[in-house]
Amino acid sequence: METQLALEKWPHEISTVIIGAKNEHGGSRSHSIEIGGQKSLPLLFKEGVIPNKPKIAFEVWDIAPVDWDSELVSAYGKSIKDPFAWVDKCVNDFKAELLCLKMQGAHPDSGDKGAEESAKFVSELLSRTGVPLIIIGCENDVKDNLIMPLISEAAKKERCLIGCAVQDNYKTLAASALADGHTIIAQSPIDINIAKQLNILISDIGLAFERIVMDPTIGSLGYGLEYAYSIMERARLAALSGDKSLASPFICFVGQEAWKAKEAKASANQGIIWEVITASSLIQSGADLLVMRHPKAVEKVNNFIEMLYKG
Amino acid sequence: MFIIGELINGMYADIQAAISSRNKLIVQNCALEQVACGASALDVNCGPASKNPLIDMPWLIEAVQEVTDKPLCLDSSKAEVIKAGLKVSKNKTIINSTTADEEKLDVLLPLAKQYNSQLVAITISKKGIPQNKDQRLELAANIVAYCQDNGFPVEDLYLDPILLPVNVAQEQIKGILESIHEFKLLCDPSPKTIVGLSNLSQGIRLRSLINRTFLTMSLAYGLDSAILNPKDNELMDALITAELILNKNIYCDSYLEAYRKK
Image 1 (spheres, chains in turn brown, purple):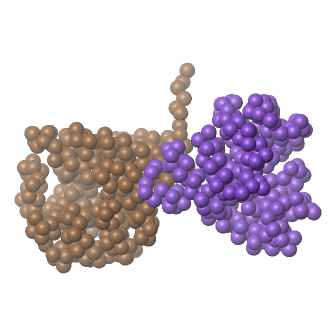
Image 2 (cartoon, chains in turn blue, green):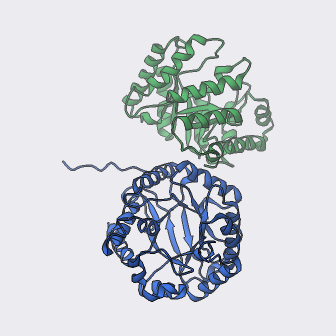
């Protein structure tokens, strides 16, 4: 007897979020990236429409990274010392469709660049490349509240994804995103209750749920991956059942987490494997956007996505 | 929970006046306010004073349909009034209600099938109101069997254990709660359960407190739906909180607001 698949029909869907505005929408990006919009759990193509594949963003910094593993540094060669050359390498050599720019240079311990300088850097980067941008601060709340409003303004109408808003510090960033036409990353510390609360707080400021991307905070393989996995799964189940406040796509900072693991640094290939396994697991728990570091890992995960979506 | 707003009812003075003066706006505002407060469907009842329910019911329905596409719960003890309402309904409908008597079921079940409507069945019969849980269960089983025999999907059936005022039938309320749970066990897929919440507190003080306390308890017994006043904010807060405690929604500090943003 043929086995009958038990198919679930979900009444609701994940929000569709667009990153990058082209000319016709007031921006200057060469293309835009669409994430979310699915009406089923990850990869269950028979249960509902999944209009968008997971997308990968290359992580780049506004300064030469100081603590990156030698394997990562060598993958980019000399270009990594010059942010613009680094971006060119990602776009031209590795065919990056999306970049995640981290403004690490503004961190008090990494150069303490001012808001004007940071904003100028973003303006120049936007004029040099047409690739849509994710822009995140330096993870110092005080400094981020100084630099991000100016950066947001410098990128006005480019529909960047800016981050990261957290429960104790979201108002400045949300107001900037609202004023300058961006979307926002809402980051919660592996805690679904805070994830939901933060989305409500941001939506109270006036940013629609459709302009929020959730960062659930992930751990890499061996470092809490399964906690993030189960939280993402739970949020998805609630969202597809009708909880709009959890129906945002997920962004996962895979590269930074994977390359923190001591196993990733143990040998040249192992770091790439660590990043690939972490990313491919999270795709299966619903990641819509993966921020990654090693070009070889990106290539492998892209191939994996193609294979999964062949059906 | 599937919340059916109870306020479009001719027993309320404003609706009665609106019906007799044919003032659509009052009815439409009442509909929109209830939806804004969280009603998933709207009960429509011309009330006991209506001299011509065959005309008043369709008028009410047409007025409400102009402003919302929420399902309408056509509330009358007279089959011909319900039929008059079904004829003009564009929204989804719920017939409210049949009893367990075959002569009622013989009329209303075919109507429900013909108009693709859901059906509320109250567990009373010609013999009167049941006096205990077993009698309720027996009537419920008869209704379910009748639906199964006549090709009506049981998942479209709402069983109402018939709530009685707490000062009239205090000894029965616990049995009513237990009935709600046991109705769900009658068959698979199970019928839905419903109560007309305000019956519980007819003619007594502290109505809102009694209603919301019962509602939270009945949710724990698996109640699917209630006809209630969604504009009672404390009642809605209690409902949302009960559903949270039953893990129907994910907690956050602003869970009341989160529910209302849905």
